[in-house]
Image 1 (cartoon, helix red, strand yellow):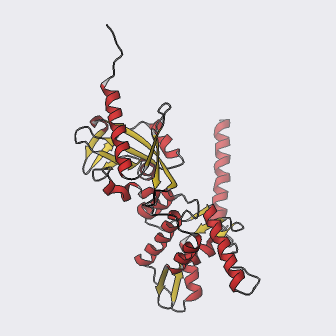
Image 2: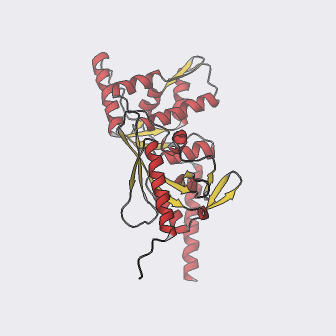
Image 3: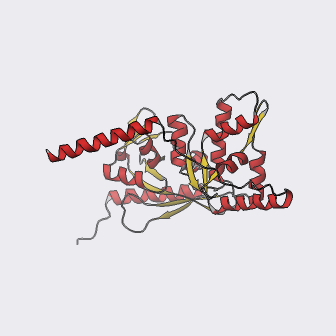
Length: 315
């Protein structure tokens, strides 16, 4: 008598999904499996803080199971995927975590496929990236690292005031970077290393030395913004700038509800403790692109290219 077959590939895939779900639960994360057809995303993972509160920080996940997906390369596993899925993952609006279950050693290996494809163009999963509670920090790296809990806005303000970089007669705080980065009627936050250097020039008579400690301080400022959810920052792009291009990121990001709360809190403190000066602390700065000599050349070349393309079409 003929009966439906439960083929090995289906069983292998379910083993991988079930094992991933178990480990993610052990890591204190929420795993929501997608119930409809698979088009490159199998579900969603949401971070939970140490107080068992869902943080709203999420990533998509694709789970594969079977040794055939992994091809050894040095200290990693090369994972082959078609161009359609590569493009889909690159365009996805949130991080896309790839989990591959190696049926031979029993481990599940992880990598943020979206970040990797946008950075290097190929997927090689380090062998050290084993899904486990011990690797939770690395697993959440492209979300900005492990999150403890969202602080009360008053505490956010105090922490930003207490995070200080000093060099001789010059000092700068996280909050000064935040305040002087407000733009677009204080609805957006601009960040660039120039903000820090301009603050330094306004305070220091001796000049400052920009070394690794200074860059680490600025990077920690970005991490703070992300972990406290103060602005809608494209952290993937920031991480790529900092790790791959070895430069400080630059961005304009809309303030979140929490970021606006922080601005309002500072305005209330100013009204309570300071006399009106006509220039409030929470006030927008202007961000402009410089139209210089090179801009003129680029426009001229763009016109030349358009003309040549029109002639090429006519021929």
